Image (cartoon, rainbow, N blue to C red; front, top):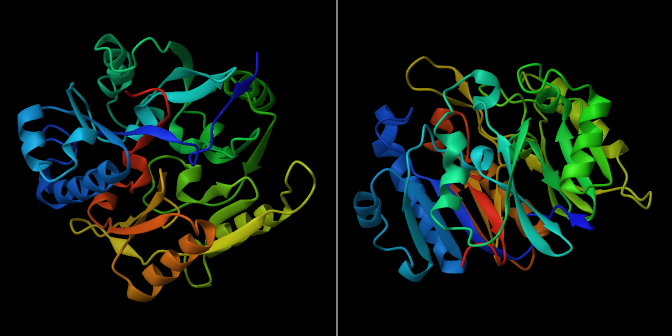
Length: 341
């Protein structure tokens, strides 16, 4: 059996979303975040299908009336929250045939309720969304935001998240690495030991810090302000990235992203985890979160154009999404071609 963990830039059949609702943590900020979801979903439907799990199909359908309707799939299912990246199935290919891996999702280490979110993949399968494609349920607590694949056998992740005692304390690093290689079909794991964002609930998901843009290119958050609380950790992360090599021994092409502007919650003033690394790669385009700092936003857009010269770059203000401590990539999950019809 030849198992492959596809890169995000592989051809896709759909992007999955879980829409915010009044019974989620978004209750007090729905007026702010719903327009952002609508904008992102509408852009996705220009290029491919959007699968939207929601509480009320009629209400959400009306909100999405300007999206490309032939690429819009609405499914009514209960949910706790909106972070599709972490509760959705992860796709691997077995001899070219898709297999959906349904890992356990425990609310980032029992921080938040996740019982409904944890059942979404099973319920989508029961409703026929995945057709005859098999779904394998697994007992490991694992979130999509913790995994970056180059599509060629290398996984990039963080020790802070994957070795967190609130995820899978029964596994040593060596045991977990062996398991991930087997279940994901990867050859090696690059472990980042440094890097974090204040306000992040995920224990340093890799998709907030460093991302594969191609098998030889990694975009990463760089902090050049020595007064910023993140400076030391992100500098150590940068040094570690510089030490990493591709499988053939050559260095990676590293593309720095600016440290996003400091943004603070309007209620208690805590810092929010804004990051330009939380971009989404879709068919023929990249969706980039921006935060209203003209200089930094322009630098991030320029970096994306370097990384993805053949894709359209859509910059989307995500100040509303970070109110609940995630960003654009966190609210999405891609399904490679052949999965969503």
